[in-house]
Image 1: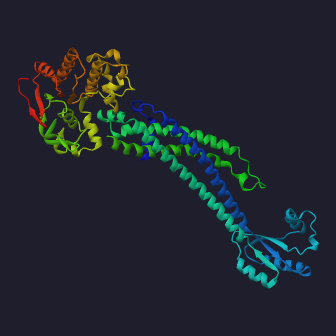
Image 2: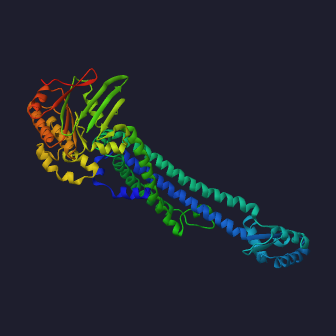
Image 3: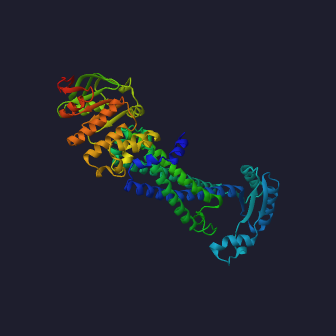
Length: 299
Length: 223
């Protein structure tokens, strides 16, 4: 119903557009507010999408991998490693399991200890990388079997540090979406204030229109159309500027982490284009609400 | 058309009109007189539902005004042309747009097609592009009359329509109102200009209502 009204309103009425005099400050105030709010909404959207991607990546990729750490005397290390691999080979839900080589372990430690780490001289635990299949494995059962077969083996399924990270990313995504809602509500409030100011400034015009037989819907339409189109224009400009800003952000890079992946990706670039029509819809509803309420007060 | 039954109107704690009963029959011509502040404009405003009575009943075209919704009041006003004392124009619109305003808001483009004839009738054909502030008092009153009749209303109300006019222009405006009455329109003119009333009574069987002591009475035939 409201969409039909919106379509009817956008078609316009050449007479209704003329009866309300062009207003000064409310015109640019509405357009500026719409542009600024949409610009901010583009970045909130980008933040929300990036957080979503991060949460998915951490939640999905890391959930499918685990590590077994074997701490044993040098003489028993190979035997316990074999025992663990044997256990893993017969454990349902394990797709792959392999012991990391000395070179891989050295590479892992290199950022902290440098390239000349004497791996042979240090009691470095052996790491076994596990990738689970779609069905997954029973981590508690695996722990019990490892305790029996290889007492030095400890299963780390990453849940201890993965969960808070996924939760943080989810919260960040929620925060982004809430920001968009708040931006929309703020824009609606600003437009209502501007519409009220325009209606109050045109009280005499409204009085004359009522006296000659204009219905509230006719008078409201003149204001609603004006504010909706101004918002659409301002919001379109804001969206374009926001997308340009997002395009200038650094592209996703593993070394840069989360902050370099904030821009839109793929079809995500289409999402900011939804913001101007949404802003126009918000303006339409807000001005219509303000106009009908104010008209009842004025006449 | 318009009927008052024991109508009272109070404003600011005081009663301005009391026990007013009157009936404007179709095609009738009435004057409303009384001293300044007696309530002539208030009574006219009650006639087109800009004000609602504080007591009694007003019936417009067989409908009680209190039962009308805002939209119904708007539709009712399309049947009542009003010439306001201060004309009530939109100063940013040219004369032609101001005159056609009632037709514009009601979507009756056919009425707009008659604009040239109408402006010729009131003698403003050459001023269509003028803005209201550029018009003289007489031109504004005639433009207001043109706007009041463009929708061919059943009733025409005029509040001191000759208040700012010289006698020659007043007679010209009166002639236009008499012509409308002869076309079957119901006319009610609020004025304190006795000469205008006498001039009208020579042309039409006008009745004169007088507001005195908050009540409306039928004035003597010697006016």
